[in-house]
Image 1 (cartoon, rainbow, N blue to C red):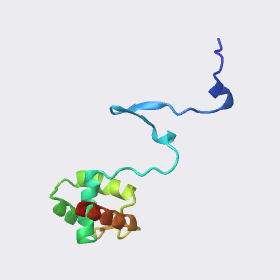
Image 2 (cartoon, rainbow, N blue to C red):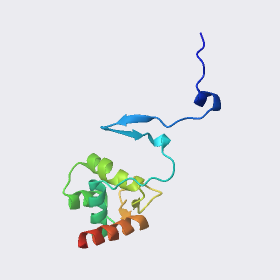
Image 3 (tube, rainbow, N blue to C red):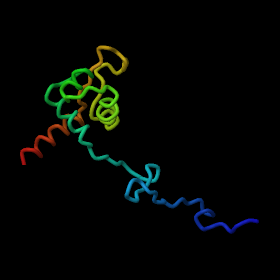
Image 4 (cartoon, rainbow, N blue to C red):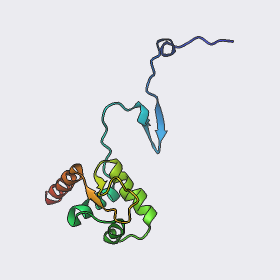
Length: 122
């Protein structure tokens, strides 16, 4: 038994369907068009502020300045999101596993630090 095709199936159009994400209805990532800048999470903001104040730091120094001990948590909640957002970069990008690896702010990260400082002044 064949069912009749809907208009969007005939033309090949795909309508954006809303999916349940948490408690809100939102478009999925694949359905969002254009450049979307995600909001900066509090952990990323803290990391940006620390790097803005102290310059390039190694992972152990970052954990120390943030007052945290769990390597995995710092990597997953602080470093990876800030690097994915283009706010932090490696000092030795060709050797991400180097024991001498440090993390520094990108130009976008430095602009964000300046923006956060201006917000606190106002």
